[in-house]
Amino acid sequence: MHASSATLSLTLFGCSIRIRCRDTQAATLLARNYGALQGKRERPALIYTVGTQRHAGAREFFITREGQQPLMASDPGEFLFLFEKDLTVELQKLRPALYFVHAAALEFRSKAFMLVGPSGSGKSTATWALLHHGCCYLSDELAPVHLKTWEVHPYPHALCLKDEPPAAYPLPKTTLYTSCTLHIPVEELPSGVGTHPTPLMAIFFVRYHPEASAPAVRSISRAEAAARLFANALNPLAHRGDGLDGAMELATRVVPFELVTAQLPATCALVEAALKRLAPS
Image (cartoon, rainbow, N blue to C red; front, side, top):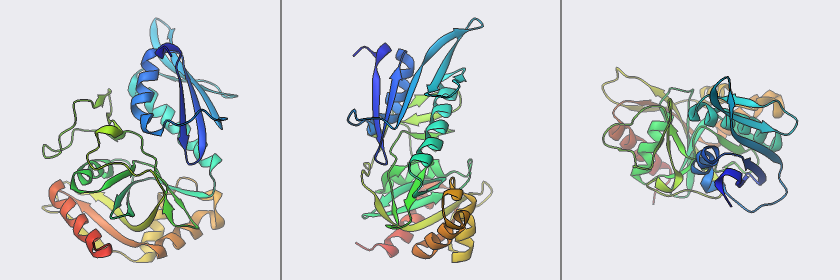
């Protein structure tokens, strides 16, 4: 099918998403970011139409979803950001049983761990580095946990960075650069991609400390972990106790740490050592 009229079909958390692309550039951007999530064309839970149009002498991207006003973006970076934001909100409505956490998720020896923290805390850069140390990719920025099975569901879209990583972890040539972000296609990730829900064993609450002379990992209490989880929950009101019960239950099921990142190779060594104690070979 010609790219200017392509249809992308994604499968996320058991939901089918259909994207009608009316523009070659929009189709290429979404295919490069969500290609690993493409699935069978089933009856969709969400239908998007995307493309470009000329407005006030400039070409803009548009994103429409049935029954909603269109979202407009001036460049590829904003287009991907707005699409991801809208899709994230709608997925939370479709799968309210999942506890969505603003976090990256990785797999180590068949067990999952999360890197939790606000934007700018360095979790995506740490994720990219950890993928070079034997960890498998599950998701970036969005980690949905099932509160009955205590598994993290994978969301393997392109890994998104805001800045170039240190020289020890160079970017592949196929990295997509926008005005504000760098997107690494899933097929270029060095340690593979998880495709199934994975039992969660640990959570690292990431704090970037540029003045730190060395990274550090410390155990924290369950109460502190619950408070930090609750602060990073995206859909707490969908759960008992407005989400606080879920945060407390989750904090009792995993081993919680605070991770202060500094030099990335040393940071990865500390995380790997902690994980090996929890999941020995």
